[in-house]
Length: 451
Image (cartoon, rainbow, N blue to C red; front, side, top):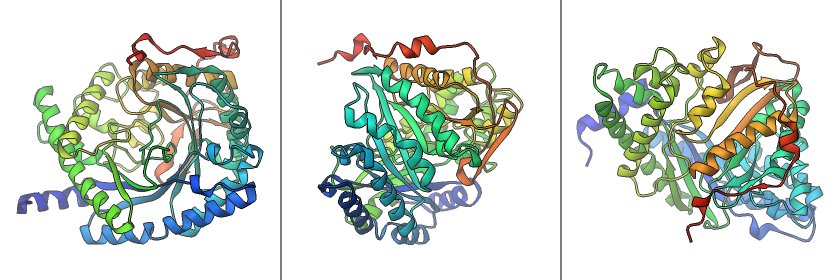
């Protein structure tokens, strides 16, 4: 039962502290859409998504009005397309175009699932599918792609890592007129999860029900605001406050998720309580860390502060719901967080420090602009480093870097909206090419053997 104080507090969170439902994401299985030809499959995919997600946008807008909480994005995720087009991988772009057309028809913000899972090895059809990614992302507007190249159970597929470095670079070049925007819709994972509602990494797992609703809640501003009231508290008390705040945020998300699933005739999947920032001031994970006592995010102590924040958010969310999933924690995308943008612009945070931070937070190196002339082998090496962190620590990690064509260190890229803007950051100039060209499989760590 909510008290008058709870209602007033929630209103304050929404109106002044940027509390929102970041996304309502409908997962849709495409397995029933497979036909004899690519053209027939693409048409079946288009019709199926339009039918299943027909009411997603109006339902989300109705819930937003009824509960008075903003629902920022309405999204769809689908079965990894590489599985749907296995019989005709060279023509996968037809299905990609059909999915993008469905997203535009329905008013969906992003549609994820132009994806492949190649963590233990790459089948012939998957190799051909991967090569379609740059052209597809350059020719579509709302379609997102992800590739899982490693896991704690299987190790890291270094042949796929090498290929992805080349694919990221080609995607950037094909969207050079937009500062490499295609790369903002492409993420490379280790330990990808099947119930992630956030883009660009969302896809619908084969072990899920036919149609599932997953919700992502976000409230960095709420957490930062709460910490302002205890400026001199020790870190134990700060962690407790973050837990209680995450509890309240998660309850709001579960309410919306269950009702959305009911109205759309879908299963309620999970609530992802990740603190996902935006470029708006007052909605920054970096500023939470600074509220804890850091002069600037990126200085010594940043990794410890982030570890505490991430853990407290998870603990608070688990208290609030038995259906917490997805990624759940604190995101640290550079271009999407005003605090990160400012720190990167002044040189106070580096790629190395961001990599260290990914050891203790959700996901990984995210929305980072790098020089356009960065070699593919260096991009592959960045992916390999991040995948190793995920594999050894049994956590999800990812890389979404943007080699900005024609841009050098100190220049800026701008994508607008939630994707924001970012300074071009330096990468190490040492050559990792021979290491990447070795290929093969980096074996899984010994702790993976748990059966």
